[in-house]
Length: 222
Image 1 (cartoon, rainbow, N blue to C red):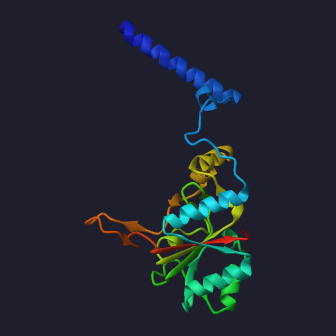
Image 2 (spheres, one colour):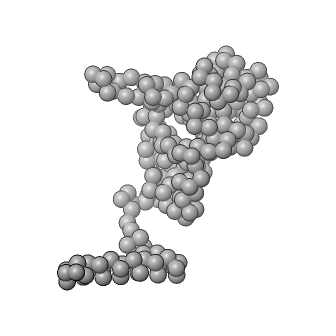
Image 3 (cartoon, rainbow, N blue to C red):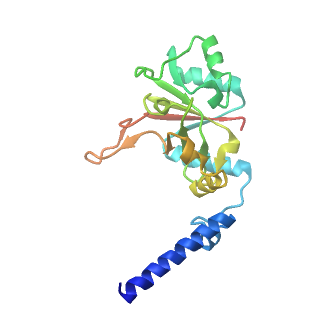
């Protein structure tokens, strides 16, 4: 074995031993400890963050409506259903309004099976919202059906103010502190930035090519 090859292998072994020792002792690597954010954090009040999110989301073509509580949210949903008698929805425990399914059923709206491709409206919660880009983070999993936000022509997302984070880096930091639960437990994680749109063919903007044509965000209690 050449001297150069031996030197390289020694360095690799030393690096592996150092990394293993850090994990065993619960210490973070220095490079992680010194990591700097690409976007410097801003001092914001909750209201400022909400306003930033609304402005960014509307620039993307989303519709954002503040609603005082569950009753007003249901009124908005019924208005968006526009007479439809069925919709797709996440399970009750995964929605910020646990009684939403029952409230809609009392008004004659059936929650359709997830395989129902004819349902025009899908209702979901969100995992987080990103104020800097107006985006929504959705994690699929038990009771949080992927098709609900992808198949229907109109997606209604229910959002609580405390779910609004400054930016994507803040969300990743939160996942790190939680042991990256979203990446381990979710069947998939998507970041939605406005309604589905593409301009692949002839640079002509087309909405609804790969998902909902409309995204309506109901901001609860804000």
